Length: 268
Image (cartoon, rainbow, N blue to C red; front, side, top):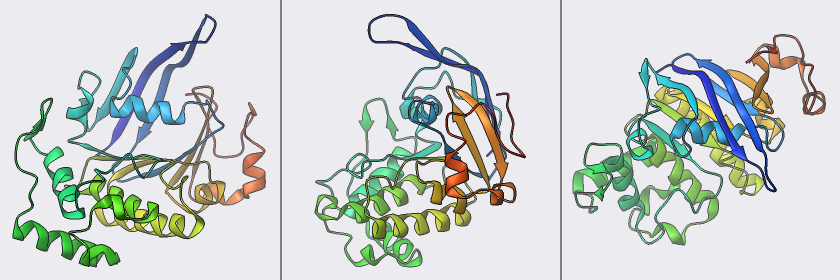
């Protein structure tokens, strides 16, 4: 589904007094199925934008629309039915004491009507049919965890745990996928595995995706579009073809700059 962020406003008090208005009329439009990579320096608003879309933070004004449905009035647990999300810390996206199969079952229930403000109303125990589906899915994705459905997720490595978080976030084909520096805590080998899985899942499902990253190598390799934020403003916007003008060094030089290169937009 298409994402439309319109006239978004959000600010916060600063230590010692004062107020910072980070977003003030921010605009972002993402067509259905577009994979957008978001970069920018620390404090520019990348993760805050994802939190406002997911409902973890309450917007001070504006709208967040998925195919014309405004989500601003929805609580975060209701938004979770249509939005999948993977966080930076592999410990945040899974229940460590539950098995892989139980975590996958939890993710499916969360995206259905049985999960609400009071939590899961049904059982967590996956049926035989559930287990067959989960095993087939993990095998199809090329994950060796297909034969470890009864392993507690807390026993997995960080990379393995993040792959399960990613699969959980995409179960039920969410309308929007938010990836918040989801490989930042991983070693290079695990990072490569998770990014390969990310690419396969996004293309397989055709889900509209926003991925925040500090890795300029990832920013230049993945996605259909690259955008750069600075102080709550969209200062750069390049298609996959347009970003080929950059190297990691030249892209890094734009951080903190009020000027941007070809194909960019200087107004939100």
